[in-house]
Amino acid sequence: MRYDVVIIGVGVAGLYAAINIPKEKRVLLINKASPWDCNTYYAQGGITTAYDKDDIALHVKDTLGAGAGICSKEAVEVMSRESLGIIDDLIVRGFEFDKADDGTLLYTKEAAHSRDRILHAGGDATGRYLHYFLLQQNPHPMLSDAKVFDILIDKGRCCGVVVRHEHQVKVIEASHVIIASGGVGSLYEFHTNARSISGDIHGICVEKGIALENMEMMQFHPTVYVGNQSVQKQLLTEALRGEGAHIVDENGYRFAFEYDENGELAPRDIVSRAIYDYMQRTGKQAYLSFENFDEIYFTKRFPNICTALRLLGFKVPKEKVPISPAFHYAIGGIKTTLDGEVEGIRGLYAIGEAASTGVHGANRLASNSLLEGLVFSRRATLKMLQNFESHCETLPKIDDYILAEPEDKAKKDKLRSIMWKNVSIARTTKGLYEAKSAIEQMLNDNVGRFLKLRLLTAQAIVEAALQRETSIGVHYIKEENEC
Ligand SMILES: Cc1cc2nc3c(=O)[nH]c(=O)nc-3n(C[C@H](O)[C@H](O)[C@H](O)COP(=O)(O)OP(=O)(O)OC[C@H]3O[C@@H](n4cnc5c(N)ncnc54)[C@H](O)[C@@H]3O)c2cc1C
Image (cartoon, rainbow, N blue to C red):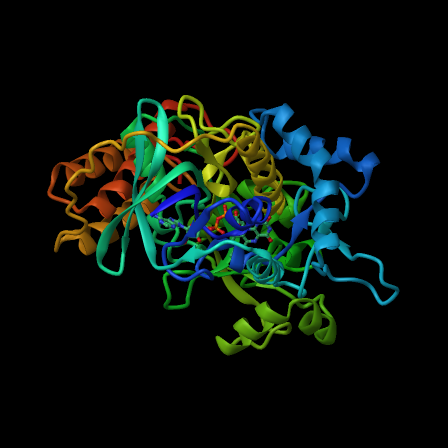
């Protein structure tokens, strides 16, 4: 199997990269489970865009503000400037954002945005609509249920990938590999991510000495219903709060204002910590209340959330829903240039949630991630087409892998629990060292290749968290005796 380009991942980043590569190139898209098992499919709220040219400066300011001073200003400016062209491109290709009755685009607002600038589709099903649309546009073949567990690199050149497909190990040669494998959700006990998202490719990068950046910056979503049985928990989008939902305790008290003057519309990290702290301090449960919503508007504007919550037995919008923060988004990732290049390895690119372009800094502004995936995947494909490489002359030796060991499932669950307990919303130095030592112990045991990759990624998160000794953005270090 020999291709010009292999794209690992078929979320927004992988698919938009694919549709920007001409049909004549031999391109293969790979995904781990089914094409729908990705975070893009689950995105609810929408896609940010600068509202118009005059809004670019303010969008940049809001993004930098959320990022707490460690964003790459250059990357943020690129993303905001190019947002208008990207949205036009989607519309010209035929994508339909939600519109008002007079045909004008409907924009909404989410936490820490200074104005309405978020476009959505299908009400609260932006990701599903966008994903379906991009799948239809993709002209290249796709290999599903194929897990990449190694990337072949020879003398500083990327030469392909190794996958498990149909119970066999297969080598797929490629002159270029684009990593679009998403974040790390399954490393945490409570998360909102698709099942297939487990940071495998970040683990390969650790092994190969490829730089990861800002791995301590893991974002937790404040409003998640975690009472359902499945590993993926039910997200209650930020747009609900943007349009009037309140965070309350069992007595209806809006406690978020004790933590920030913007209450539930403060940046996500502040709201997540407020809920976490209030529940621990008072022993009370936090809820999301929709009582401000007109029932017909709520049903129409948030049809999917409404159905999901009613199926779970909640009489929304009248009844409030118990919430907790949960892991949501990997801000950090594989360090790239502004054109998605992985420095030091020719032919290797990283885009979307897997990458760290520097746009999110220490905290991601809501709905900037679909936009980041679109903007930087297009930049990466343009760069790749300019610097098109010929096939590798030789391939490195392929190792003999043991992919799984009998104890792996139990260790995987242990890892999830450690990451949630010690490496989540509020961290302590002691807790981080405990996590580090537990992870090292598991790495020293006999573990299969897939678990090893997860452990390496988790280790990178913990080590980055230990290195950053002061709190910033989503990385919050609390004193040992603080509750
Ligand atoms: C519930 C939810 C709601 C969200 N809402 C919004 C929102 O409203 N607005 C917004 O901007 N962002 C939102 N986000 C974040 C956003 O959806 C993601 O950051 C974005 O979709 C990531 O896109 P991606 O293409 O990088 O990765 P994904 O869409 O996650 O795709 C990753 C792909 O990589 C593949 N893959 C992974 N590992 C391997 C492997 N080892 N081998 C082969 N394939 C592999 C997977 O199979 C998948 O196809 C939300 C996220 C979630 C979970």
